[in-house]
Image (cartoon, rainbow, N blue to C red; front, side):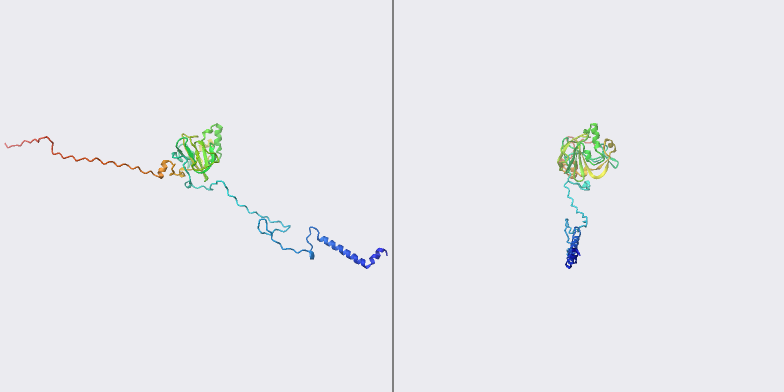
Length: 329
């Protein structure tokens, strides 16, 4: 028996070896149970499972947050309310011309020289197959002030106004053609104002415009001076009122060769809108609203009184001549 066999033969040695082996085995098991990434040990050493506690979400919905490893549900954020626009926005659908308010006369105490309606010269629109004058012509004297008929924003104040009056097509061709020919001055000077109610006002044939694009004007503000620029035979103002969300109207076909598109937004009769009883309305219209008082006719003087002539009894100064009597013979 060598010394190693003698040591193993002792009873205490076996007890010690068993104890060491048990200790090593217990350590190996403990290390295996507590490796990173592996859940907590089961049995007496496992910590009790806590009940889930609802967590407030960042949106304040009060829903419990998802546990680890569970994908969060896709939350659709509540859209913020749209801020109202600060721009002057017109109504989505304009009212009929008869219901428009707050218009004033663009020329004071003028004469009406041509109305909106059928005409055998200077036609522009075709309505029901008939050539129409598309606005109201009024006149006073060259250089008189022209006023805004309604509150609004100035869109243009020169000869390129066709781009702002509701054509369907390319109205810039009108100006471009005349520019190539060197005849831009053949076009009228005009002001177009967006009245803020679905309508635009056109003031044509001005001697000059006294406003600028983008300028906001009030009804009655001066915007230009009466003139005869463009196709005009004398100083006057051509005033058109255009319903920008109205029906399409036909443009006189022969104008197409000059660059005019064939369709334009609805032109309405300004006399349906401008106030006839206004102090600056043409007198003939104002008199229909407020008839002038009749001038009293002075009473005729009574005829002179004459004394009756006496009845004559005979001619004075004459002696009656006795007729001869017949005597019996």
